[in-house]
Length: 276
Image (cartoon, one colour):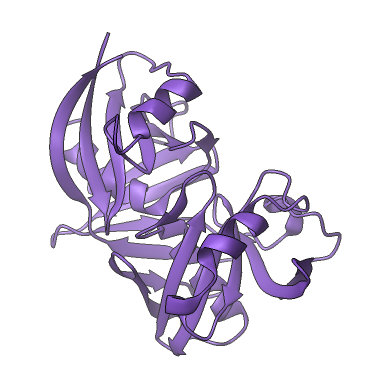
């Protein structure tokens, strides 16, 4: 069996995208890990799968697998690549593409300038939404880790995020604190960890330790989480530029009960085929 794919990226967060609208793709976790290896495989952060719609309100189902082979609920950078892929492949001519993910339905809006806006839905701060083992929802939480106290905000934007404020992202303990917090027992499904530097009320710098992947050059849902956490603390305005290692995303969120939207690029790298 051969697997046809497109290699794509959003600000350096890279993917392979597969059209499975006519035949459901069945890959084991071991196969996905092997394909994601950057020395012996194709190399990618996530595998994105385009499937036929599971209900009438959407055009496609959108499935996401991390490099470790685990399926996850949401990926904002991947969603932009998904939109560019289905348009480029002639699977749709829609400018607004509703899709279903395991984290809920979202809408992808293709813009005339080639960028894509993703309506990620309404952020959910309830601990059960992540899940996070706390009975009460608060603006800030704290955990004792490695002899120190770590404070953070927590939110689900279709997948779970913990967001910490740091003085400088360049010196943030991403490689040490990221995996420790990701696998903390109070996050039974693990968690993505954002390290956020608030530059001013309209700009954030961010590095993200992604669950099941490690640090990536960009994380769309991480950018959403950082922005809405900072906004919930009244630290930023409702439109914010988020600087990631791979580039910038534009985030908008008007506050509780409203959807968060991110806008950014989606780039094709090459088409390929691999024997399984």
